[in-house]
Length: 228
Image (cartoon, rainbow, N blue to C red):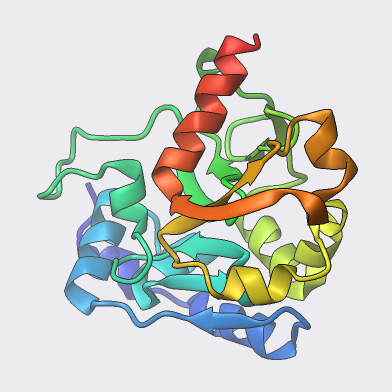
């Protein structure tokens, strides 16, 4: 297991790359402050260097909030938004024997959609794609979709305006006002649900309410299993 200095003291750290992408991109992005001790502990458990964009976000932030709260990218410490460690169930103390063979949840959207960085055997866990590839569980389809590339590519695309294109069919006229009022540990539940024909046909006319995000994600996964 590499020690923390091996992970943090690197040439060409990724954080300036992230900040430049935020400054130059058209997507609104808020950098949540991170607790240095918690961020370093998360990076140590994760065993990636701060040269990578994943390591940079974990070490230097409490997460990124994109597009008025629509997309949440997890960082190294929690608060108003959950941390990467919390979402993925990291042990309370760094454990060299612990890992995430099924993959790492790196972000959620306000709909309860889930972005996962694939582990070494995605098929074993019912996911498509290759090891190291980002995949997305779509709440409007109740199935996994592949995203072209790994974490750095995914984050770069989202910061460069890709979020608007990725979600363009799921925006409704008042989404920005509604989403900005939703807590960062909550998501929006729709009725009729997003995956139903009625829900997809007219998102603006659906009933929407904020619910705990972890509950929303669990409902989507359970519904997908029930529907096969």
